[in-house]
Length: 309
Image (cartoon, rainbow, N blue to C red; front, side, top):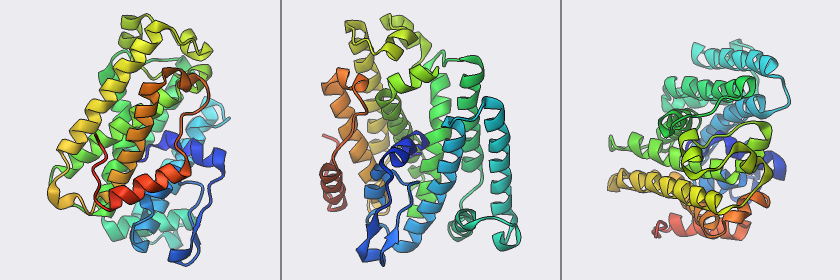
């Protein structure tokens, strides 16, 4: 999102104005940094881990706001540079002596408590800068290998951070995080095709667009042609492949500690299936799941149900 919880999905949080209180945790509120999908994923985490993840996503949300907001690319670049400096302060020592606000102080505590390495945060910021690069030059990803770098930076990094908080024992957990993060980011890209294209951001690889004869204008205008349907099915298949790779790298001894990631995987798997079944929906508003479906999905995965069938 992300990892597991990709930064692009934070738009949903802002649109829905999500601020959910949980009676069982002392009426604490999840900030709108946590989109509804994230909320259901973190519902069963112990308080300390939940607070750490909230801090991570507050930081990611800030960066996402800068990359996707109304600032000019130049202004956004300056603000992202300041965002990187804020991260410097979080890793420098006692945040109370560094002038950071409450959200960043919480992030600094999470970093210390769970020994979160800095590299994933730095890569996340590089991913935000890749978005700004698209705004400056209308650049595209020529190949899937290029797109995969972006997916790693904006989603796989969140996965790598999250598993440090969730806990794991197997060395395959990092591969699990990266593959699941890529799967979720691909679902986000497919869900937001038209909105992104209208902004001038086309994330699908140009080689795929050329292969199926689909243009950026087709995406921006929402043309559900037979060529587009074939392209969408191809990209859905690619996302399925990354879900499969993630599951193959989830060690038995880590299934319980990484259940929050599995809940997120299950929710996005359901979103992918909806996109596959009704290709036209991606041009008729955001494909989503109802809150009862999300809750039931979360509860069933928490109770040990297999979701990828």
